[in-house]
Image 1 (cartoon, rainbow, N blue to C red):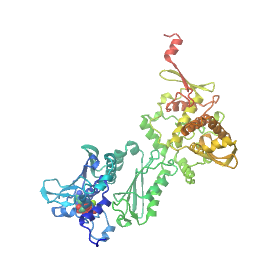
Image 2: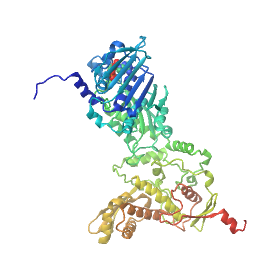
Image 3: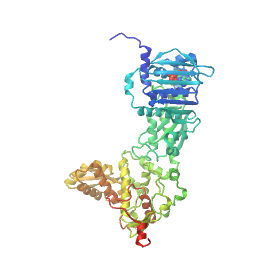
Image 4: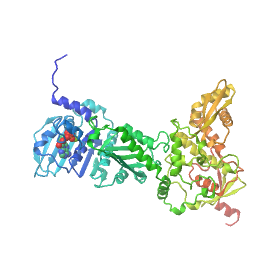
Length: 625
Ligand code: ADP
Ligand code: MG
């Protein structure tokens, strides 16, 4: 081993650069933070090739005086703190004094700046950490930092860079975070001379959210707020009709700094518990402000993580504020407004709910999302369940189950779980125009007759209903969201050895459609949960039908095909039968949902669901032509 020696500054800076500057996005973040700290009201970010080629950040802030320019790019040089105590009084985004030094060490950096009290600006070039002589130049008040050939001094780091698209994605994310945290600043993002974002100054947060995440999200924002002992929360959460399969749309800002904080992500999940399906994450934009000494921001080089003095209090503040807001918000009204604007339907198209007539009907005109009373009830039931698979005991709440028994007129449940379905980001512009409703006639308790522009349509009520259920089921199974109903008393089903083997082999597939089985000694299977849609079927009978289905299936069938067969079976069982008398509202609902089907013309078995008698044909038959 050689003797201990001090590392040259350039090596120290490279080590620091490794921590702070990971990719082009880190450069954008640091330079934008400096611009915000400079008091700028206008910040322009320009990139070439996702920032791999060039990054330029220009601001109209306070600028750097000629004397300070060389210091600005020196390591551990900052104007933002003076002593260790200041670390707990940080009110700026930067304070470590290492960003510019780090970037300059691993790139070709050009710094150009002018302060308000100087007539000229100055330009400084640093080439892989090597300072070149400073020169005066003409420039507006403010600062421009241009970074080229990033990582040219550290080829290893360069190898870790991804494609331009990936780097651009990270860079846009860095821009988004700062733009959301500082809505008063005019911010522009350019990529290869194309304007990606141009966000006006003094913008409202919802408007900025809309620019990044679209109008759907903006219209579904719900304001939340609260405070507790000097800690203040404000911002927006998004109506549970919108969710994501990841938690990246959970933006939390602390004193203007974007942070990622596990406990706050957890608070969000808790607040939405029961409102989102497993695997879905809420969307939120939350601002926390608190005295600088209530938090330690100096625990992470990129300052992404922070340490709260009283994390528990902040957790409760966030959870409590959102939960209370939900319990006092009528999400129904919101959804209906959103729907009518999305579909361009006036309120006149909202017919009175058939439920008003005293039935338990939950057709499409009924609230699509539980009202707040139901919501809290639902939430409570959900909250008492810890099982992640969310086997839900619906027996407690008849409201979601529709009518109570299958087999007669009272059995009709075309949308047994409308409210739940609604939470799976169902496309919104789907309600058919009002004139298509209320025009079908049931005949012989088995066919529905309606008209279209082409002619007369005769619909097989069972086949159509089966198709509707099948599509709904399939969508849920594919998204892993099928509701399963837990049996209060699991039911043992004796099987033959072959049948037992078939079921054992298909256990995983069965679980996907909500049927939970387990061996129960010998060749008996225990059914402990089954699809909520089949609430009124005998579980033993149902398992036997499954076995029958498995038996018939070609052994070479793909697992997916077996699943499909089982879905057909369930839809068939859950659908109204030929011979069931339907109420006008039920007829209407079937007709309405017909238009939502991907394939409304065939039942899952391939039989037609409807026949069309064209006007031409009718005219011909009646010898009108
Ligand atoms: P820090 O931001 O942690 O202080 P930096 O290396 O990012 O460290 O910047 C060093 C110093 O250079 C800052 O403290 C600030 O005084 C000055 N500076 C950097 N960028 C700008 C800018 N855009 N406008 C004005 N001053 C700047
Ligand atoms: Mg900085």
